[in-house]
Length: 92
Image 1 (tube, one colour):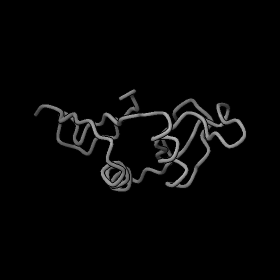
Image 2 (tube, rainbow, N blue to C red):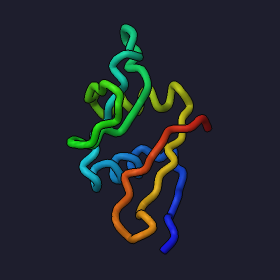
Image 3 (spheres, helix red, strand yellow):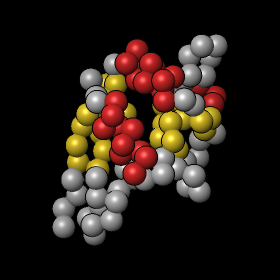
């Protein structure tokens, strides 16, 4: 089975993808500065990313997402049919 990779800027699609996988909106703590939440991530509890992540609210997450003009590239399923947690943010 092949992986299914998609790209979106739709907030509801991003939130649903994260929620379906137990993910939460987050930012890399060391990149935050004042009102700027910093670099965005989706945090999956129990899975380390190597970055110190701070959980943030969806509103702050999507404010930064729009300000930075990002898109979300993600897989829905792995090659063996499991739900995929692969996602990354790219410039539009």
